[in-house]
Image: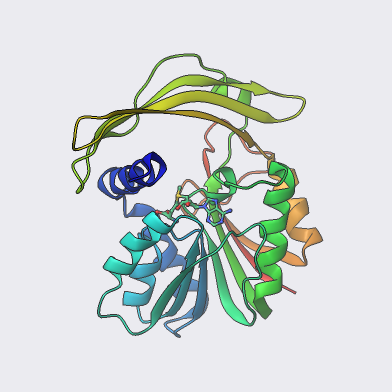
Amino acid sequence: MKSDFIAKHWYASMYEKFENQTHDVDFLLRVLTEQTGNQPQNILEVACGGGRICVPLAKANHFVTGFDVDEHMLLNCYRRMSGLANIRCYQADAAISVWGVAFDLVVMAGNILINIESEIDYKEAQKTLIKNAAAALRTGGHLYMDFDLHNNPTARFNRLKESSYFKGTDELGTNGRTVSYGSVYDPITQICTGTGHWELTTNSGEQINITKCWYKHIPTQMQVYDWLSDAGFTIEHTYQNYTAEPIPEPIGEATNRAIIWARKL
Ligand SMILES: C[S@@+](CC[C@H](N)C(=O)[O-])C[C@H]1O[C@@H](n2cnc3c(N)ncnc32)[C@H](O)[C@@H]1O
């Protein structure tokens, strides 16, 4: 079997094991109830991964479509949606695909804005996702965004220290850990660059080391607000750190998570 397959399978399995928080999903369900009553919505979740968010949406009686670029993550979503007739999922790259039309709600949660994997320029990919969300919505439909937002990215992302985020053994018997050596943030380009590797041992004892060099564009609050406005959205509500508190303008030290509810005009 190819090392890439083994590694991606292992990572998707570790994601399932360690990224199983529900507070953000509960918050989304509350906002949805507040903003739309209990009317079932036709929802698109972008980068749905293993279905941590889209499956509870389907269980809350919405009609849900989820897509993700990673087929190993999607396989976990497919397993989780067993028996639910009101959800489907498929594989696609959000930055280069057409998402469909006339959805009531597009969900871009789970910090996808800061975790886009794409061949195109990072900032362009961020703007493209927001534009694609507008194209996928009916007039009057809504975009729900949930992403990391910090008032001092230099302090947050300039850190050179070895750490391991995921560690464990998957269902195929692959054992391993992620190793990060930290990241550096350039305040002029707003690009954060990091390096590390995945250290894996297959079920037959073969060692696999996969180099991981990544970069992300860290947008400011105003950039995101401008991209939304350029794409034809009006922001109706903002929520700071999963509370009823709106996000202050400009954001302060207390802000680390931004949740935005925006209507397509
Ligand atoms: C942090 S995970 C979030 C998954 C899920 N939404 C959740 O919250 O559990 C990010 C997901 O984005 C997906 N992803 C990254 N870039 C993508 C792209 N260009 N198109 C589609 N999915 C993408 C990854 O495969 C991964 O499943």
